[in-house]
Length: 98
Image (cartoon, rainbow, N blue to C red; front, side, top):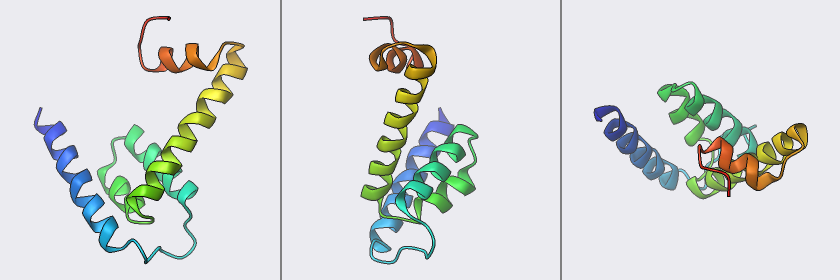
């Protein structure tokens, strides 16, 4: 429970830092690099890398990049499994088949 609270607080503080730095993107990082780094760090539960990647671009850009990454991943898995994107997305989230 405390881990979830810590993560939520950290993400909130990161978003505030991101808003303060919205016009100052680190050189060499675009929103897709930030999204890839952010998602891989979240998957590995590496808070330091999560914070770093979240600071590379604005929170809005990061959100767009993460959404785009999710879409591309679901499409790739659906093609690989020869299933619909809806079926794959629901399976990834642990939802019953529709």
